[in-house]
Image 1 (cartoon, rainbow, N blue to C red):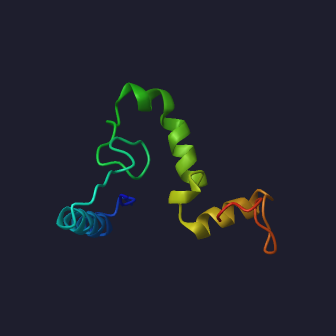
Image 2 (image 1 turned 135 degrees about the horizontal axis):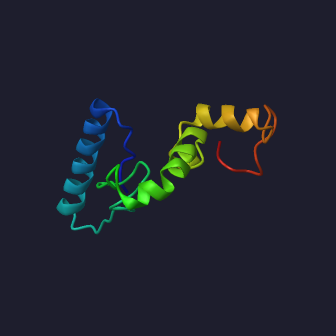
Image 3 (image 1 turned 135 degrees about the vertical axis):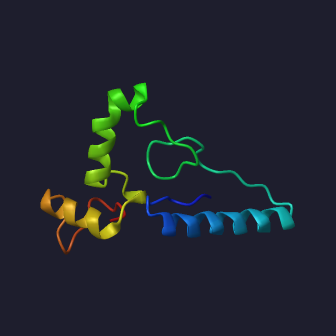
Length: 102
């Protein structure tokens, strides 16, 4: 479990509140839980690498390209992903890309 953060503080505040409610329910019923990621370069982490970090100095252009292209379709806006896949000729209105979620 864990929210996907958007960079929009209003939306992200609501998602943090939702996570808080999820954790309260887990605690109430003594249910185990975990977050998929703690530190992540994408959109689901609670902590992020610094913009001037060695990691982003080396891979920042690649990370930005993945974000722009919607390469992580599980966390991308579906309409944006479909549009890019259509432009690349990977899908059309009748077909998907081998059953992937788009």
